[in-house]
View 1: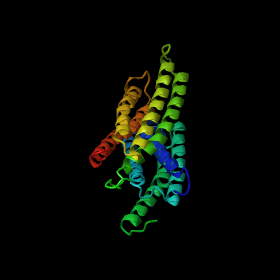
View 2: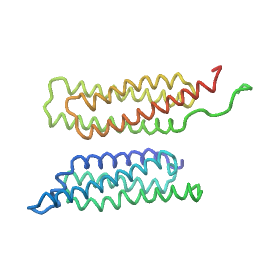
View 3: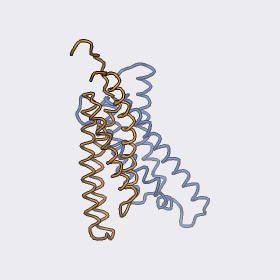
View 4: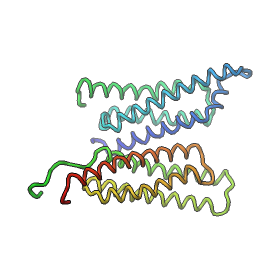
Length: 138
Length: 144
C-alpha cells in the first residue's frame, strides 16, 4: 500500500456515487419532465422514464461490479485504477447532485453515465480480466 | 511460540476488510446524518426536545460503532473469540440504532433510508463473517 488513504477514499467515493444514484432512482419525476416538451403524452413520458430507469439500473450494476472488485482485493491496491475510480466517482457524485438540484434535462444523464460510471467499471473489468485470466499480478 | 501450537493464521481477511471499510463508512455516516439533522431542524417543525434527543442518539450510536469496530478488529487480529463475540453483541445494539433511524425517528428522508440501509448491510455481513471467525478460533485452539 504505497499511498496512505487511497483505499478508504476510493471506497467512500464509490459509496457516495451509489447513494446519489439510488436517490435519483427514487425521485426522477422532475428530471423526466425537464426533458419533455410543454405538451407531452403519457406514452412519451413512459418512454423517457424507461430510458432513465435502465440507465440508472445499469449504473448501479456497474458500481456493484466495482465494489465486488474492490472488496475481493483484485484492484484494492492498484494506485492507477484507484485514481481513475476516485476521480470519476467523485466528479460523478457532484454532477449528479447538480442533476437533482438544478433539475437537469434527463438526456444529460448519459454523459455522466458514460464518463463517470462506464469508464471506471470498464477499467475494473479489464483489470479483473488481466489478474484472473492472464495472471498478471500488477 | 510454544511447540505443538499451530502457526496457521486464523484471522479472517474478509471480516477485517469489512470492519476497516465500515469504520470509514461510520465516520462518513455520522457526519452526513448531522448535516441531515441540521437540514431537518431548519426546514421541518419538531416537537420540543425531539431533535436534541435524536442528535444525542446519533452521537451515542457513533461511539458504540467505534467500540464495536475496535473490538472486532482487535479480536480478529489477536484471534480472540471473546472480543469478536462482544463486538457481535454490540452490533445488536447498533442494529437497533440504525432501525430507529430508518423506521421510528420523527422524519425519515430517502437519503437516510439509503444510508442506514448500507449500514445494516455492513452489520449483516459482519455478523456472518464474525460468527465464522469465532467458530474457526474456537475449533483450532482446543487449549486456548
